[in-house]
Image (tube, rainbow, N blue to C red; front, side, top):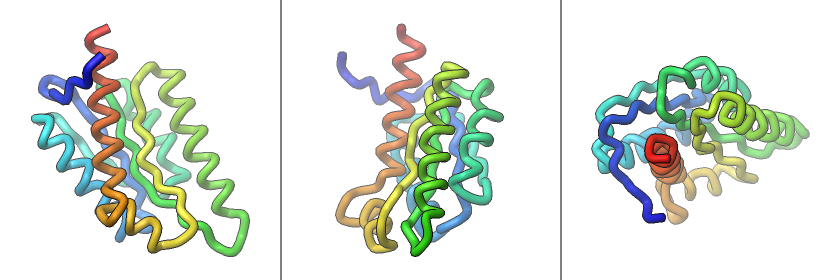
Length: 146
């Protein structure tokens, strides 16, 4: 199966964590670039406090969109908080997709350092927001075509 990067006629929700906004806004820029290049015209952006809140936001909007793109950045600190937030975000977003049938693209960075996050938000490792949007397009198209 070839990837159909045509997003015309599809509706996308982007849920973005405000925590680590210097990173998440760059992820959002990447997602917007991907959606624009795929000719998506129906895109809404919703902001939430942090990555922990992404699953609830995704659940709330999932029935009105063909796919949800979840963007966040969880950067390891000196406490186990990183593991709890990263795990909750990943498990919660997967649960939303499986329970609703709406594709949810995981664009949540889980890095050890701010520098690693910057590398993945438009730096040497590309932009994972762009990648998440392309995943959302592919899965929404898959749902629509099959």
